[in-house]
Structure formats: structure tokens, C-alpha cells
Image (tube, rainbow, N blue to C red; front, side):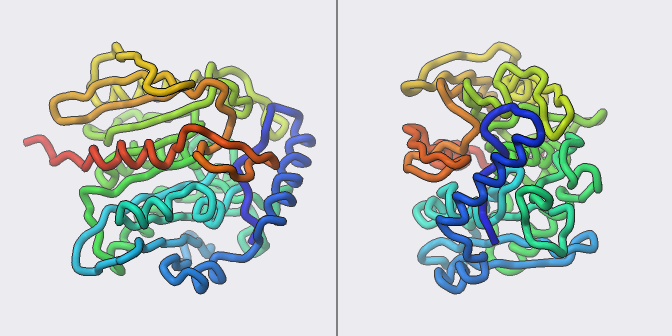
Length: 334
């Protein structure tokens, strides 16, 4: 299995996007191509599972923390890769397995569906994606029930391991982040808080849920795949019209019933924060603008992303986990 990063570096015609994705996969393949079963055997605490869902085999990796104790319930964090990513990419490069070891929670890395599920992943013709409701990917065109899949995985994890159902979280990058937005709306009762990186769209149903979890979102100012200011983005031979990234944060604040005016601050170099709330119950929305940030999952270590090495001062995993720790699921209002 080749693990890759999500999408491509800039808005180019569809043919150039395919070439860019292929180069990305080739470079990352040089780093490591062992499948998750081999990795699971090597580490012992990272275990690959599969189930038949919607007529196809679906894969996810569960990482148990160091010193795992089956006698007490643990928080669970789902990490959703971006388009053209894999469960292995998330497991290896986002840092959530290391964070699970340090903070003692269960990390779950699901994998999206491929247009041709019986064939191996291929960046040109068989890329994994999530049905985020956008209509942009094969998973959307085939109406894959990824919300139902996620809840089935959660049920399976809870049947195997002790799970603190008040501390189940979801984080995603790019297409995976849009998937997290969808989960936060359509399965809001299951997730205490959400983390989204480099996603600009949220689709709210006509009858939105009465209660959603808190949200931390972040976006780079020079993200050319999903421009922070929104606009028309050429993608796969069509024009995808996207809103400004902060619109989703404002929409989420509205779902939480928070005041529409955000406090602004600069918590760290190259970071600008818009914060809605918290309300008396602790619900809030934080939106971080990363000055100079591209379409990457920021980590404070060098890693391969879109064929280039980079180093971020910001560690998205650290920031999001600290947010999650302070936002358990709120009990229903009587």
C-alpha cells in the first residue's frame, strides 16, 4: 500500500493535477510502502481491522497507547486523511499515534473508499476519498455511506476496548476535514469536539441538530488547493466554487448559539485566532489563520508533503489535542 499526502500543491488543469499526484506518490513510496498489516505486526499496538460495508471491504487502524489498561475507559480520536491519502498515511505522519501514547487515548485511522475497491490504490485512477457531501469525489458520486461506516467503526472499537463515550473526537485534513464537518452535523451526538485542517466547506441540513460539539479549525493563508478567501478552484476539469474558510467557523458558532462577534488575538508567531465563545457550558469555536501556511497538515517535525520536505513551528496535533482535552461532550440540556 502506498501512502500519500492529500491532493496537490496548486490549482492547475486536471492533467497537471494527475501528474503532480503521481509524483507525490512516487516520492512517498520511496519512504515506505509496507501495508498496515506489516506495520501492525511490527508495533503490536497498532492493529489493522476490516469489515464489509456497503458491499466493499473497508479498512481502519486502531492504535492502543503505551501501558494500555483495559480496566478503564479511554478517550478516542478519529483521524481522517485527505483525498488520495490512506489510513497508513495518517498513522505514520500526523503524530496522533505518538500523541495517544503520551496522553493515553485510543487513536483510530479509517481509510476512504476507492472507485475500484477490488484494485490497489492508484493516484491516477483509484484514489481513496470520503463522501463529505460536496459531490467532488467518487465516494460522493457513488453515495458511499461514510457517516454510517464511522459509527460502525466506533461501535466495533467500543466492543473491543473500553471507550469513554463522552470523549470521542474527530479530526481531519482537507477532504477528511470536510468529512469531519459532516460527522459533526449528522452524527453530532457521538462526537464531543472536532478538529479540521484545510477545509473550507460545511453543508448544514435543512433541520440542523440541536446540539453540536465545539470546533477548532485552522487554515493557511497561501493554501492554493482550498484558498482561505474562497473562490473558484479548478479541480478535475470542473470549477469548484468555495466559500471563505472562516464562513464554516461562523456557521458552526451559529449552530452552537454563540454570539456572532469573535474575539481576535495573535497567540503565537504567524498565527491569528478568531474565537467565538466559550458559553457558560464551555462550548466554543476557534479558527486559526496560519500566515504563510499551505495545504498541509502542520507538524513540528520535518515530513514529506506533496513531494517537498517542510518544517512547521505549529504542531496541529498538539494544538487540537489540548482543545479536545478541555471539551468533553456536554450532557443534554434538561
